[in-house]
Amino acid sequence: MKAVPAFFILAAMLLGLPAVGVLVAGCPLARYLEFPPRTLYIEHAPFSWMAFIAYTLFILAVTGPFLQRALRHRHPVSVKRTPANVFPWWGWCGIALGLVSWVLAWNRFPWLSEYQAHTFTPLWIAYILTVNGLTYRRTGTCLLLRRPRSFLLLFPASAAFWWFFEYLNRFVQNWSYTGHEFGPAEYFLFATLSFSTVLPAVTSTRDWLLSYLSRSRPFQHFYAVKIPFSRLFAAAVLTASGVGLFLLGVYPNHLFALLWISPLLILVSLQALLRETHIFSPLTTGDWRFVLASALAALLCGMFWETWNYWSLAKWVYHVPHVQRFHVFEMPILGYAGYLPFGLECSAVAEMVLAENAKDRQR
Image (tube, rainbow, N blue to C red):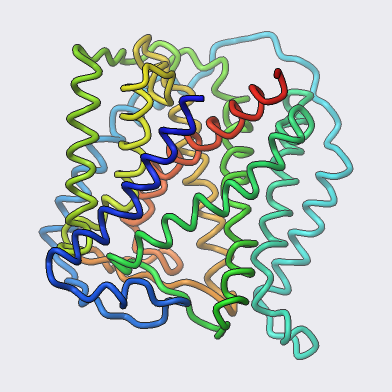
């Protein structure tokens, strides 16, 4: 199973390179391993108009062609529509649970004080049920029903997946948690429960968006990306990503974006070197639908994450260097761009989990 060595190489690079980097730079490693993380030891760079404009122009340069093509082809091609299915009962349960959990998360009822900090997981269980219900209504099926065992495996995989980002965040401290104090065991348990909903939420949202993009000709026949000497290119990208991770904790104010980009580049590079299909493989024929659905799924989930986080008791706040201004909820507006590569990472990891489970069932 090629996915297994790829995962272990990825994990070793993510865990080892930032730690080795700060040790070589002479920084005390102990502060990066504090658990739960409470100490803010990185001095973040103040807001910079120059950096804000540069990041804005870069984001527009990357997303502009897609927005332009979407606007140019905003009138959908006439296709034969299948009859809509009835929204399932469990989808309605998701909506009801979401509304109740939202009210509980944003209020401070005395009788709920002991459990006030634990409203995140019910909110996202509700979201997952609801978005699967929406997919079922459009297509007559959804990941929850089509592959229930694989879908359930996404929950523990998601918890492990997000713990890697929590670890990388120790070296840049772009977010921190406030509102409730937990001991190490409680923190690990409650955080793991919350982290377990990330991949199921993003993957379910991706499938729902794909139900709209599946017949989208503009992005099915868009710009074809063919890289000559692809394995040599993958090796170069893998090396550059490794160097970036090595320097992440040494230059956190300059390299913080690598927290979101490096894991994706490393994983795709390893898959390319192993001659495996990866998330960018369809781009060789100009098919961008899966990539777009993955990126937009995380952005949509991000809007809900940031919305529900805003008035919750146990919450996170941001410390993003150079662009810490113009907040939408707790997030500085340019920070939402980080959800786009994060969605690709979610899809790449989710597909590894789903594919491995399918192989196990065939044996």
